[in-house]
Length: 304
Length: 317
Image (cartoon, chains in turn yellow, green):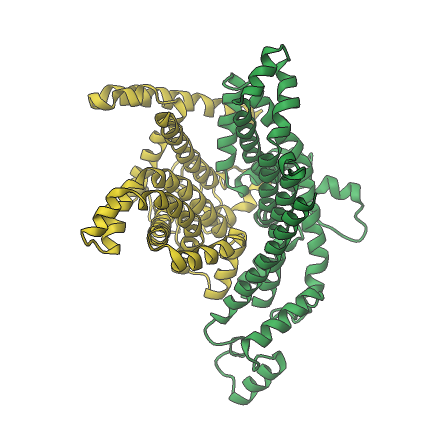
């Protein structure tokens, strides 16, 4: 019954947020972008609102959170109530504060990892497409072999070897994720490398680095941006999964994955508090997926 | 007929080659360790003599290619070496757990494949209807949920109300029926995670085929839409569907790791997480190679199956 009720409330909120965000965007957007927002599906406007909401919380975490990040406030596992609105965790820290700081830590680390993976993957991919010949062959076959190992298993193997800390976590996940980006960037760049303006730039005497940075990358941006969204979801979920397994971001840093693990015992008593951080992860991933879905749809629609 | 065997033979060779490269990567990864296993095991205070003795005992004084060869041949004969943390032979640790993990994956697959194929066909049949849009939104949402979120919601919902147990304890006395009952929640959690993706891809594959002229022809001659989809669209969309199913089954094999931890299921995933926490590299290597082989094998089977379903390759001119 409660499940049904919460699904209904969720759906209601979804429609309200979706409609009002779309209406708001339509009114405030500059004239040339208005048609874009008019045809926007509800899912996309909902997704955009949620993403903006998360960014605001992550930036102003310190101002919004009622207590300090690692501050031990009172008794353990207090129920929801006035000073601690979402109760306290197993060490007596305020849950609401930790959830808010989690937005900064978890999302920040996931974003940094995705950005690093993107830099690595796209530069290597474009370089392989540009160089061609044996450089391309060696790099591509090597990355094919790496891609044949399941992602989670490969990251677990690397984490065993290099130990588990936030820095190794970022590096390991970025390397694993960059293999997929490499593939995409290479195939997109191969189409661009054969065009006339690249030939002209080469004849002008532009170096490889400048070719990648100034000529190819701006033209390969559209597919890469949607891929960025998808990869972000993937990286975010794998970091959360690893933190949940106790191998990722470690306490006392507030992080959604490890918060679920720490307080999981509450679930067996029918308390939903440990599900809130997990829900926060799910909501952000859903929002990004909704927006990416819309972008993909628009990209395929515009081509016809 | 000759041609098809040649293609399958090529694929098999490629699969073996991939497995070989993977084993090299997994083995080579340990070579990146600062120091070696002996110095890690004995710690800072070890003398040079004890280090040498342990290296001799573990065979670490041999050059890397020879150690690789010993490791690989041992692996193929079922001798995985000994665990550093528990000092037990790894084959003993892995044996029963491998069976448990395979059972859970197959259980989830048996639930997920029929459900997602049916939903995918229906969504393609009634495309752009309310059903299609709702199932698309639900599928996108389900893809975005972390596995542990789905698993805990199931525990909160189905286990709190007393329908199913939230923990799996397998003993000698556990019957298959009992096991099916106990493992239902983990299998359901895995099913929910993979169904969405399979359903979306099935729908896309069928809709792709529905754009062809022969579909329009069969509609014009008065066939019912259901019959058109089942008789004409599905057989021609089989190759991509088989691939999607295989990719998702391969995903199941690794997805079990998180779900096993949530439900305290005695499988390979749990063992691997424990080994990573203890930095028990020999166990991690073994399980990684096992998982990777299953992954490659499934992709290989999908490749071969989708080649067989293509009549142009099957009956070559």
